[in-house]
Image (cartoon, rainbow, N blue to C red; front, side):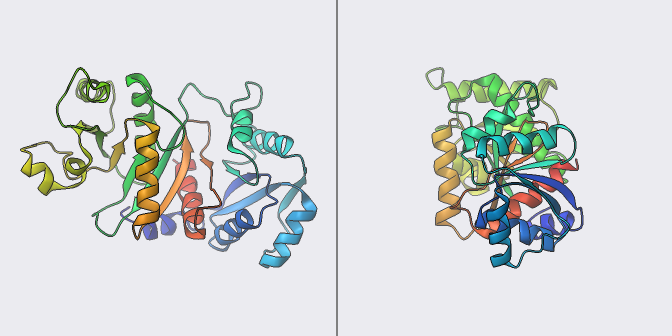
Length: 298
């Protein structure tokens, strides 16, 4: 898949059950309406029923055959939605009008949550005018300063997402401030470690290259100018960022300063988690749901 048109095409009519926590939110219900119109999902709406019905009427969203669980308390609504996924009554979790910290507390609950042995990480996908294919960015929202092993887990998470989009052997560029290993720069040492794990087969299903400065990862001309001869150079599918600051700045730069399409989900739980924000466009929310649909069916 090379763009979001492809993603939406393949997600259409998959009709996956999605549990929405604190669904009494106009923007979230608007995204659900768009997803329902394409038959991407069938929602289970958990939240303040009076508000849900009010917003649905304003949006002309038909909920005649949709299950609504009336729970105005956002913490309890989050717990109910998570448990629906835990009990296999839904395959995707979506955040509604609730703080991320509250819903993640429910996700990590040992009794009914979606905790696995994997690290939770955020994955963003961009369709950019000046890049020749989809570009994945991780981690822009969850892990502050991941160490080498945490970067391995973040890589495994996003490689799995790429596989669900039929990208069989994604190219992972480990982004640093320079292209050579420097013991004083931990990110470059981590990059060398990940490359070695990839070569040994410990980290498989992808091709890893690095350390790369950003330009060398996405521009063949820049890589050639620096004399970098690596199959990942200038052709990365995935940018593995060194810290949350670097990831977040890149994510928001691409989202707000370029004419891009984007989507983002949380990985590493027992099911994909759609965490849209009020700053996201309707298109980005729909793309995020489609992304989760395809990953849930992997």
